[in-house]
Image 1 (cartoon, each protein chain N blue to C red):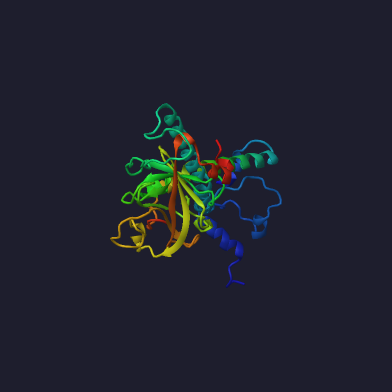
Image 2 (cartoon, rainbow over the protein chains, first blue to last red; image 1 turned 90 degrees about the vertical axis):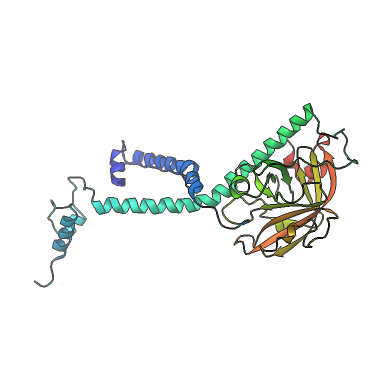
Length: 51
Length: 286
């Protein structure tokens, strides 16, 4: 899977490294700002009244 | 020799089973470190499956990293921004139509106006406690519902709606988180020292309380919310502010920290924010 991504990325190896870092940053951003908040809204509340 | 099958046969048999690597019949060493790679290695089922599982593990770990960061910085700053906006909106509203009894002037010596009670989940006021940290301000909502008040992006502090209002004789009791991955307005409640100001802003103005003491109780001791805290059936005498939150600070909810403060003064909105608050926390200047 990751090998396939590496092959698909254009350019020489150093460019591929930069491209993959950008990809990782984009995935991380979307996780932190969209995916994880959505997941958290699905999880049950903690049981205690105040914590 | 015949009893032990050679390693290369064994491993190529495994690859056959997984449907890959069948075209390479070289020795184990040659396949591990080919002198010259002429074709790209095919993706194996186990390889892709392993990568997916590792990715899933990293995603779950990322969620665990995200939870405290999100709650302590992002949601906390959203709550702060929301309460700043509410404060500003009240200020603008007061300029066009002053709250009842607001005749201007620093001190207010009439009857202390009480805020209008709000429905659960609506904003009642804004709490300022310079002792917590510079710039601390957090919205106070009606009721103590987790999703709409305590964990929301706009409020963070809940008013026990069956207790009294700010400025009212009795007990104005609030709850907020202290530990865990949720926003924690009352995290630094142990920073309070006798005499520290605790200011509640409502649509009408500012109610200043003085911190008196802190005590630790069990979660079942809800008599801290009584009009006369800790005494049953005794009529209210003073205007008390009570903050309830968890104890210990970082590790759970087995006990409750209860902070008490006593009402000192009321300042109408036209007089602006109490000067003491601005002196102690210059970041509140807008």
